[in-house]
Image 1 (tube, rainbow, N blue to C red):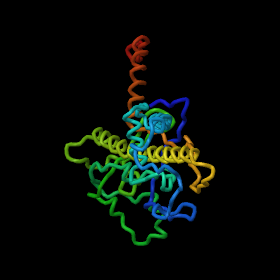
Image 2: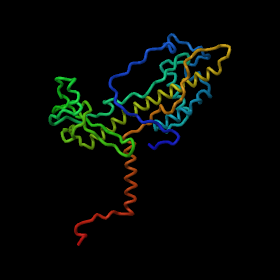
Image 3: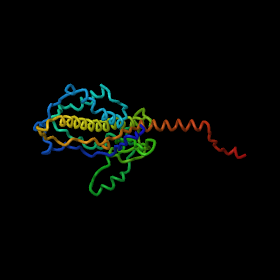
Image 4: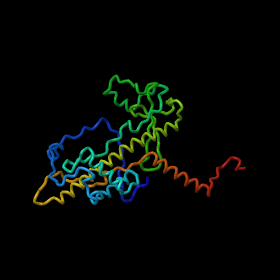
Length: 287
């Protein structure tokens, strides 16, 4: 997907170790059961919104569409979908609006696809050797013959193409010649399966993050509009509104995107080569 000049977004990287527990409530943002913004009227669903309120986040729909590559535009359906998400989980304008935080790191399970087993015992990985001082007696069970073998795609973020790495269950690289592929599989099929798996997980990870951000921004915008309508004679206390920061959005890039770019490059190269064929020198041409 070509980058838009109006929106340059960071790419998503990283492997997550463990899970992240939700942050404990702070005094400035108590649990919903103890919280009251003091805003009136209290909005709890799409049906409570005026037509102008429903359209007040059209720019956010466009921003998320660019980041996710969905080409979605503001419409009755897209607005309704956004506001349904805004009011999901029983959220109302009387509840706190929590920022979702940074995108979760990519986990090994998101990147790796099982393609068969090892035909032979593999030598210990270099990374394992470095850890042996603090891991006495550890066995290389995941590198033994019969253990699961995996493949993971590696997107070239700065150029065209996708490369592939064969690895063990701990994501340590190994040689593809030691893999016994699943019955009926070829190496090309294994690579294709790995690309599809990676793309499915990456779409879920990035789109979920971007949508959570847009929901947070939409809630903040709604609270801000109600705050402006509130009479000055009735002071209220609510958490600070969340400012829209497009740098927090993550541009979705998939293996399929990179393959399409490569296909376009190949087509263009073949077109040019058709008018300027390359002559391959043969021994007999020297006679």
